[in-house]
Image 1: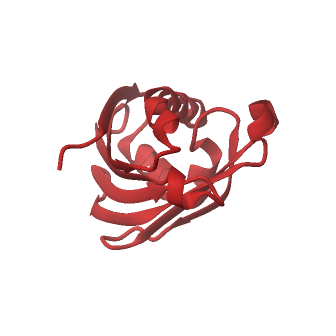
Image 2: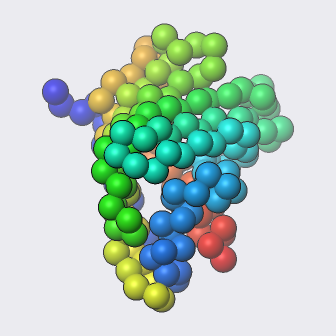
Image 3: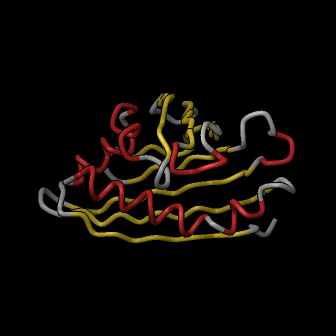
Length: 157
């Protein structure tokens, strides 16, 4: 099956690879930077093992106007967990209360290559399925991921 959409990102961080790894795998750290601007993460669970669960809920903040309070759960499982180098997970994300029409089926690949000083991060998101009311969310993926990676930069300091 041909993917519906693929987006790729590459960033260089002035942080050790272990620091990036923890940012991507520690629920308390994920809560601090995950998602696009103007969302918070009220719920985050990580069972970091192949077959383990990843669950993150984004909630729209005040600045999102009419979307304020809207929640977007994301749930799936880890397919690959190579400490300090690679994460691959398959997830479904949706708008709470509208799962049937807003679900997005996605695989995300995260690659880290670095040392004690700098880390190159590569992220690839592959959308394999999308509900009829989620097309705009998929179109805006590039924008949202860039905001998220900017937040990661700020989080890492």
